[in-house]
Image (spheres, helix red, strand yellow):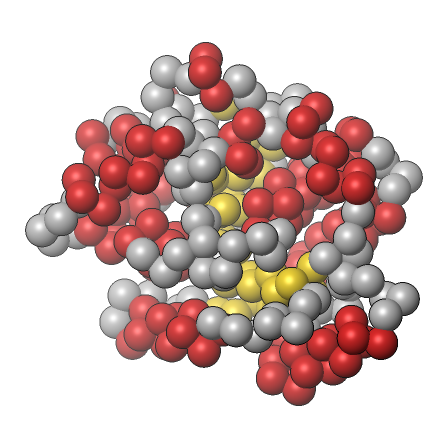
Amino acid sequence: MIITIANQKGGVGKTTTAINLAAALALKGVHTLLVDLDPQGNTTMSFVDQHALGRSMYDVLVDGVPMTDVILATSVENLDIAPARIALAKLENAMVGELDAHFRLKDRLAPVVPGYEYIVIDTPPTLGLITVNAMVAATHLLIPIQSSYFALEGTDDLLETVEKIKVRANPDLQLLGVVITLHDRRTVLARDIHERITQVFGDKVFRTAVSKSVRLEESPAYRTSIFEHAPQSTGALEYYALCEEVMARV
């Protein structure tokens, strides 16, 4: 299964979800690859020293370097990462006019897909070529939505892009679900927002909502997932529960 995590809004927990969902899958004994397609490279920095990288996903997508040459093992057993660097910001300019531009990631991933039970792809907060590549390559789409007043802002554009991709580029792409992030159960507003999101997405909304958590914010600084940094924390328990829901759905 190839799960792309996408939402063109920034600050909704895409990277946190990518890191900790992938880590949870690995902890369940599932061989998992985490692909970082965000030029900011925050997913990469959560596991490896970005300055020590030789090659990255930019080299794979632009120069045709094999995926096997960039994939690195992480400190989490069963979890590998395909890292990103800031060079990815130049991807769209580098691929202007390329006939296979939207299919580049799918083609590059193909040789390594049989070696992993799950591939989780983190994307930038845009609906540009990088995110489109990630959705063309995916079997499933997971959308994190922040528990805030403007939660549903932009989701129409995202879903419209998904439908366009399904018409030709990837007819088999499925919406795996919507996960509510940065959720504060104590407030009436958060409960109202949860209801609004459920009205729009119905049973596609995961039962597990991820709470606001200092521990989740801290863990990348220690180059680790929440499961190594604070295994008994609320964030760890919630992402483990989300992982179980994801596995049940696919």
